[in-house]
Image (cartoon, helix red, strand yellow):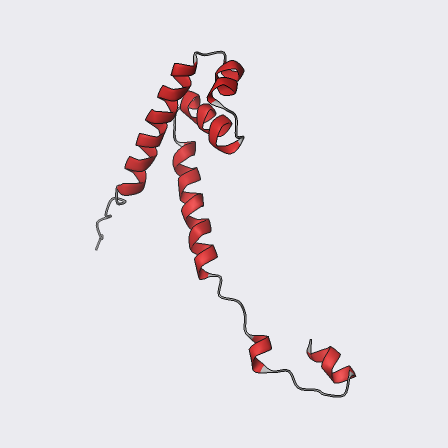
Length: 101
């Protein structure tokens, strides 16, 4: 931007134009989603598959049940259990590590 202004003979750039955007909110959101994905990766495979098909891929419960060859009630149960486990993990503070001297 400054080079363009110099070429046009002005040479100065307003300080407002040099400010970097505030990305803290976007970074916090990214960290939150990264933590959720870490928790999802610790789920048993059956629950993880159901979560990915329904919540990531956008499958209906019926489509997920057909894809995994299980009854629709099983999909619903796996999702409910997965949601409960993730909520528990998110709401549980990490263990405090003791300081060693």
